[in-house]
Length: 305
Ligand code: HBI
Ligand code: FE
Image 1 (cartoon, rainbow, N blue to C red):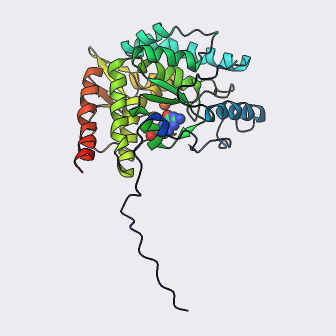
Image 2 (cartoon, rainbow, N blue to C red):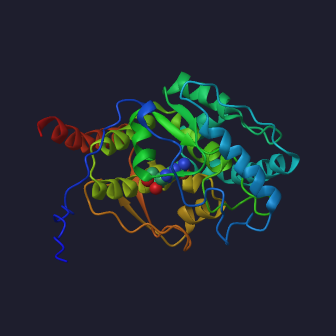
Image 3 (spheres, protein in one colour):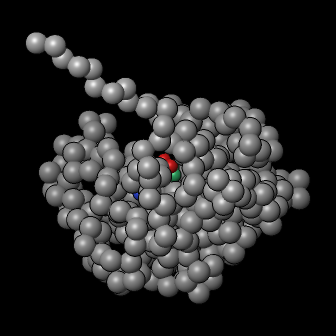
């Protein structure tokens, strides 16, 4: 039997992609990694009750259409306590370690140890301040979908709480990381604009460029720092939601360098300790200008070709 070879696959050509035209075109159902099956090093791995609760909260996100109100959850006593402990610890470092835009936002949001904030309420504050929206999601989205959401001023947020055995640690995004780390900065218009630019670039990015943008996101939104007079202050959510990282950023053995979105970005380390290098902005006005120039190249290329 003579078999004819299949025509060669054009490996170097991207599969035709539909560029999302609105938030409705972004699928929030495709979750990577940890979905219902937590990895072995997750603090809730052996806790069936925790896993069930987490899956139930995650499942609510799947049925929500953008524009629907986000379901209000009644948090359990151990979840309330986890929130109170994490907030209480982090608040000790905010006055000296967090940027002034963050401190102003935290005042406005009025976090209290005895009340776990509801996503719907912080969504409404974002709508009134920067125009950002919160869309609940069951877990980690594909980087392209997550970044594309930012183009439509939408932040995909988890709604479940980390495991109560480790209030200061989570291996995945959770409500505390989103609410304390991300939400306050998203009320700032310049910051919100900067983040949206990363999203706009991602709409037109190849897969390789998505990987680069993931790093730009990592070194700004997750681990960015800003100069205030002569002092370095945190604005990245990965720093602001971690007591150890806040301390390390301020006093640890680390490098500082100006952010250059065009440059090759260092490899990201998720698990092995704190960041070795932080990228610095001189202000959020400057950051939004810089990223506007950066994203413009992607937008211009799309409209020429
Ligand atoms: N998904 N839900 C969620 N939250 C994130 O913070 C997140 C994500 N998917 C990808 C991602 N972050 C990063 O890898 C960057 O690509 C944005
Ligand atoms: Fe995050």
